[in-house]
Amino acid sequence: MVLHVNGEIIEDSLVYKEAELLRPSYERAFADMEPRLREAQLIEWSKENVIERALVRQYAKTYGPPISKDEMEKTLEEMGHRAGGRENLAKQFGASDDNKLMESIELQMRTDRLMRDICKDVTEPSNEQIQKYYEENKEQFKMPESIRVAHIVKHINWRTDEATALEILKKAQAELKAGAVFENLAVKYSDCPDNGGDLGYISRGQMVEEFDDVVFNLGTGQISDIFRTRFGFHIAKVYDRKALAYRGPEEVKDYITNELKKHMQTDAINAFIDKLKAKAEIKEA
Image (cartoon, rainbow, N blue to C red; front, side, top):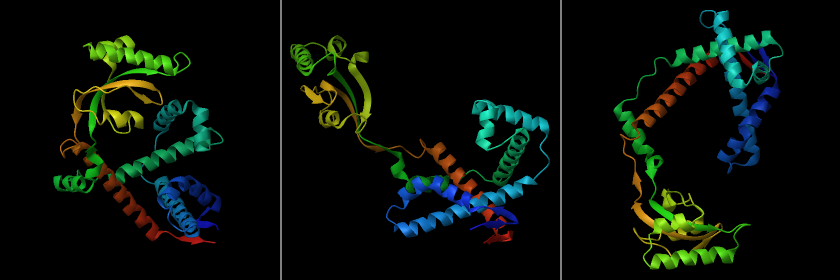
């Protein structure tokens, strides 16, 4: 299979290389599809990607005024710095010498300019569009139940065996029952004494399951009994609870605006590519 795109020959190796790049995410997304059909679709989509890049590259080569040597040198210096040197940059572009590298940089600059010009007329989304996106994607903005919790912990490791760790926690528990301040005991006994053992606000899944099972069943101001996790022994105290809630539209307006603009820019680029494809001569042999 060899593609001919406006006279440019594209070897099938490029299509298969594209397929291998897409494969991990593609197979996750289409895990339920019959393998033979999934593979055929993957190759077809990879072919389309390769064709579209060829069309954009061909158009960009002659689009707009020439790029000056000074502009290219400045861009080359900046890109080389980010890549860790000119040699690494050349490897990234697959350029065998400086002339090839400069050609690649010029094409990249021309392509970037073309993309900017295609998207220059993309407008700010309206309030109605922002509200619609918010309603349709509200689950993205969910803030799970969280608690502010502190703990006194004694890790079990090469320095402290299980019996010793438990004995230390029992001492701390006895002092708590005698009226000692939890935070002072965290500083005195805990392997994580900073801020009196305060972990701040956590939601389920941030800590190990054994920890969550205890602390999320405590009331505000309540102190747990001694309990065991895979790390050692703990005594926990809950200071505050926040119920599950959703961030409001105003809180996430900037994020939604950026997402909608990205979508509109993608739509503009796709529409441009569709026009190129409609005029192109594409053959497969």
